[in-house]
Length: 377
Ligand SMILES: Nc1ncnc2c1ncn2[C@@H]1O[C@H](COP(=O)(O)OP(=O)(O)OP(=O)(O)O)[C@@H](O)[C@H]1O
Image 1 (cartoon, rainbow, N blue to C red):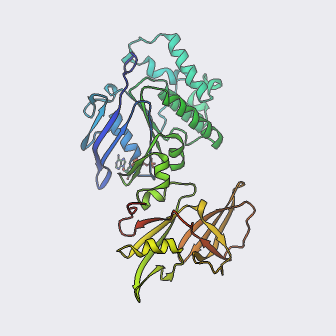
Image 2 (image 1 turned 180 degrees about the vertical axis):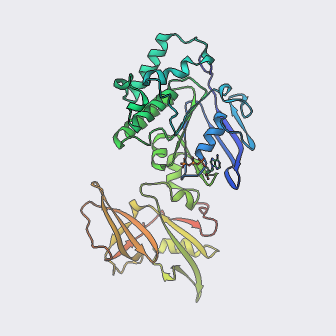
């Protein structure tokens, strides 16, 4: 890693692929990170996030693809020549060094050949210790730390560097909710003010949305969507993304459209689905048979089961979870589970009949075969 001030760089990855035996861990991945940008890569366990990190930092070599950091093609370079600071999910701390020395270790490495003076090292280490609320633990060894404290040491050891690219692999997963929330904001502010870019890997799409300028949704080694958190939340590219984003995720209801007597019937698991006239009109214009309706729990309402209104689906109470500011109710509807965020204090016995009302507008329609969102929504 260089000691001079880093030149602003942008990461550009194209066609990156990696296979382990029968597993295609990454398949033709393309993404960019601009200077000062935080890009979160989110996806379920096994999606390929750590593999991407290892390919970028040179711990693993790609089968195909190009990795450019600024003007340099780095895919053939050894890790020490890449100018990438990588925080590992496994922490990889030195057991014999205390917290301060663990964090200072990259600045004292032979690569810097003693060019960073001890006062600058101390200032930089103290700065990241303060950021992560770890100053009081500077003298401890890793064995004397909790899991969350070890994670913060690994985070500090990455943030203390001045690389061209930061890679943070699940950097705050072991911390309690309050500290996670604080650190999300603090790290975002710090990294956003730097000339370098940051990649932040997390299986938690809510964390990805909160921390990043743009989010890459990775499922099964393939990029399903890249966009701002708002774009991805409002218009997930397919049902695999829709299942991951939102807290809780979007309701998805499989439907089939059949024609009889000149009119279109909407069915879920064989039962007629009562949709609003506006939704009926949209569905009537579709050519295919199998579709999926998507609507967020925040805009899903519960009502009396025997409601005569056109857009009420008959379900049964499956779970009632009071979360303080709201109550989350899960209703079952012929095999589908649909959620509604309702006012606190809602109570109903499990198994009781309930009506579920889709929102008047804004119901998303996905292709039932490919899972892709239909255009023009
Ligand atoms: N060295 C390896 N040998 C064989 N298979 C591997 C190896 N490393 C990763 N894999 C496989 O590649 C896929 C992607 O793994 P990866 O660790 O990149 O996923 P991830 O998104 O980081 O998951 P997690 O969130 O659980 O850490 C998985 O199916 C995994 O089993």
